[in-house]
Amino acid sequence: QHSRLPLKSRRGVPVITCYNTIMPHSMNQPKDGVIANRPATMALPSAIAMDMSTDLLAIVFGCLCPEDIMRARCCKKWSEAAKKTIVHPLAEFVVDSKKRYNAMEAMTRALPNLQKITLRKLESTQIRYLDGEDADDDLQIDEDLDINVISRFTKLSYLEIHNALLNGIYPMLFHFRHLEMLDIYSPQALKWDLEMLAGLPNLKILVCNFHGGLSGDIKNLEIVKDTLEQCLLYSCSNVEGDFMDLAKFPHLWNLCLMDTSVTGDIRDIGSDDFVALQELDLPDAVYGGSGHTFQHISEVPAFMDEIYCIAKRNPPVLGCCYWHLSENSPDNYDMTVSDDVDDETPEPPFDVSLVRAGSRLGWRWSWKGDFIDAAPGEPNFEHVSCEVNWLDPEPKKDSSDYELYSQELKQIEKEINFFKGFHEPPTAERYKQLCREQRKRRRQTYLIN
Image (cartoon, rainbow, N blue to C red):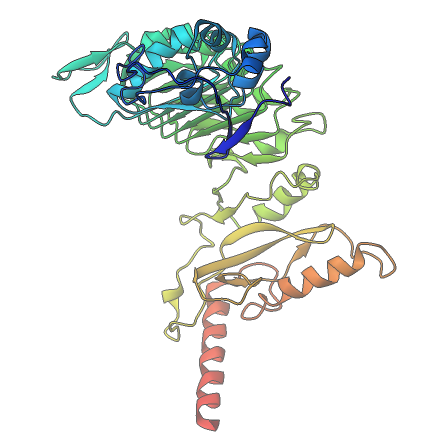
């Protein structure tokens, strides 16, 4: 019977089309406060559709977006089917106005198995959600909306809060036993602690960006150790602890703790730690984290040897990491030490990064300049590098990896020019000499031309 249903596509979503009798009476009045502009006529379900069980109808409704399911409730049987429908999580419902809030409230009764809701900033500045516990100073507004109605969606799997005006602590937001993803972005005055994740036992994805209201020790994620796959906490300054407390999470493959107060040392990562990890971004407060600074050039070779095992992992979990020589280092100097610099003179190469050619791993000092116009496939920034300090031997010419190694090596060598022959940054005196030699060559070229 399902295959015999007449279907059409609307906005890429299949919609049941009913061809039978037209109801002549007006349908302009909103039902449950959901649709204020419904058509004056509506088709009754076809005989085939009426023969379908409510369970089968619920499966069909599961292919529709929430708004279309609400419109389809044109009889008691279809309304009962809507209550049973498990709405696909890709079909989100966005609440960004009083009208959409009223629709969500109606769905708590008519479509209780909605799986994905996104709360955004309401379009009117005079409407906001009721304050939670420990709220900041109250604001003078015309109307408060009760956010607690969201707790009626007991099957909720995905909850996104993007710039929604929430003020204080809302415990009910953390009591969804089926929730798999929590995504919070700049939520104004929302406050919560990582310990509150105890109410989300099946959480797989935790994303929080620009959220000063989040606090707690990273070790409290132990609550979701057996389910957590992605933990992306960016610019959450009140999150602290040692990132190694997450080392034994069996399914964690993406970890970002940038701009948090988390500390630690990536040299502590052992072969049995972070076994599923594919992407890692750690704050500079972690020794070896992205943006970490070294006090001396001489520290770097030993550091690279110590992180070799984690750096060799495939996929490369440290591929996005970068390091610098500290501005306060006695080895650091500015390009102004030379009187022969111009717009085309590269700055001293005080950035450190890993480099790969095929399966061969190494590291180098470099300087990344401004973005430039480049041909397709070429780097879109000026990158001037020292020689590569290889950690692996060169692959044999008859190996399967040699061709890829050769191709990628050529690209790497294009960036070794000004500092050719140097495996670490030159001293200030040597840098001045390089600048003089470059200026002399350019003057000679100019005179010849």
